Picture: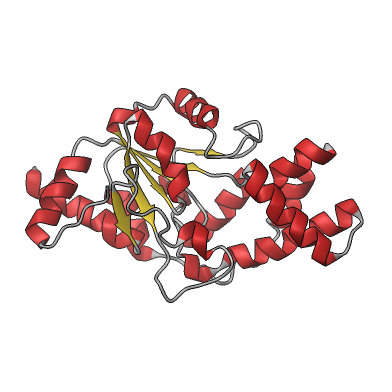
Length: 248
C-alpha cells in the first residue's frame, strides 16, 4: 500500500527507510520524466491512428477501434500489429514518435535532483531509444542516464510482461533490492514490486483528463505493489534527497 503519511516527520522517516539503500534508479519515460500535462501522448495517439489506417487501408474510425483493441489485448498497439499483421516495428516507431516536443521545456529542478541522486539512473520505456533521447535531451537531463532500455531491446515485448523486466535487469546488472522504479502506470509496477524494488507511481493531477486518464491518473494507486504516489517527480526526488541527508 502507498504511504498514508500525515506529518512531515513521518514522511521523512518512511522515505528514508525505503530509499536510503537504493543505488539504482529506474524511470519510465512518457508521463513520468515529464509531466502528463505536456500531453505528448495525444500527438502519438493521433499518429498511431493514422499509421493503423494507412497500414491496414481502413478508415480512421475502424483504425481507432483496432488501435485501442490491440493496446488492451497485446499491451501496445505495436505488439498487436506485429502479432496480427507481421508489421516491421521500426516503421511504426519512426512514424509515431515524429512529434513536436515544444510542450516540453528544460527542467532545471529535475536536472539538479537527478544530478544529486546517488548511483545509476536508467530509462526503461516501451518507446524507442531515439524517442527517449529526444525527450530527455529536451528536458536537459539525458546526460544523467547510464542506459536506455527500450522496446527494441525488449524484443518488442512490452511492460508489464515479466520476461521483459528480467531481461532488463540482466542486461543492466541490477539488484532489485537496491533499486527503485518510477512509473505512470500502476500495472507496470507490479513486477518490480514482486522482484523486490521500491515503487513510485507518478500521477497526473486530478484536473488533467484525456482518454488515457484511467491508465495513468492514479488508478490502483492504493494497490499493494504501489509503495509511494506523487504528482510531482522532482518534488519527490528532492524529498528522497532530503530524507537521505537527514539519515546520513
